[in-house]
Every structure is written in C-alpha cells, then in structure tokens.
Length: 203
Image: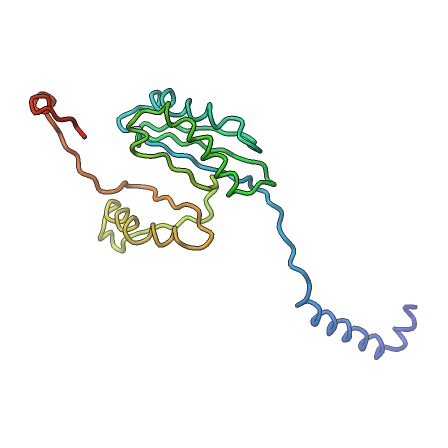
C-alpha cells in the first residue's frame, strides 16, 4: 500500500489536504470536555466571641456547633480552627464530590441553627456566618506603593474600601480575604467603677 502513495505523491497530497480541511470544519462542532470535580465542596462557618481566647472558643463555641453539624448528610470530614487574635472560630465542613454546594450550605445551616441556644449571647448577637468556600486560594493580589509613599495600614484600608466588595461581587468569586494589616479601629479604655456607679454596661 505504501508503494501506491510513493509512486503517486499527488494522490497522497490531495488526501492530506482533504483531511486537514475536514478536521478544520469539524473542530468547531467537537464537544468541550468537562473536567472532573477534584476539590470537594466546602462550607465555611465563622463565629466571633469577643474577648475569648482559643480555649474558650473551643469549649463555648466550636464544640456545641460541631456536635450539631456532625453527621450532616454526605459530609466527608470537618475540622475547626480557633484563633485568639481575632476571637473567631472557623469550622470547615467538606462534603462528597457528587453533592451540590447549595444543598450542602442549607443542610449545614439547618444543623447550625440547632446549636444557637447553646452559644453565648454575644456570639449570637454578632451572628454566625456560613459561606461556600475552598481552602485553596485561586488568586493572590499584592498592593504596593511606589517609592514607599504609603504604609501597610494605608494599603490595607484602601483594599478594604475600594477592592474587597467589588471583587467579591464578581461572578464565580466565593470569598475574599485581605492579609496583612487589619482595618482601622478605635480602642477605648473605661473605668469599671464609674460604669457601676452609673448603672451601665460596656455595651
């Protein structure tokens, strides 16, 4: 068979050109392959307990919530992080690959509501937030000031005001987080004896 094409190179060239033309025409109609889901759906639950350390967060917040969320449908595993620096406990619940993240969010939220009565009042007043998220960041963006004209506090505040909300509203973005310096805050010192005389509380 090879001798046929060797002796007739024009036939071989015509067949090759036809195959290229047919391939170019059909490439537009080929189905796009779907990538398999490799990262499990994850629900992030965050609660704030002002003034609490990591041990208090674990005992008063993390344990009651974990007891209720434990065993939610299609859950693979979960783990919690308690941070003294921002008085926050974070519970990450990972689900099976075949599940719908929206359904997972509703199921986790219904379980979390069962723990509301066991949480401290200040935690309930701040509220418990639930979001669909993933632990691996998709993109990291760095801000810098040319010639060091602004410090890290200014840049972080600029990111909170001008970038955080617009980026979070983009299609496909589940969560944004700003690293580095925190938001501007005001620290107040009070005299407990004066508050007691006036009959008022810190709140």
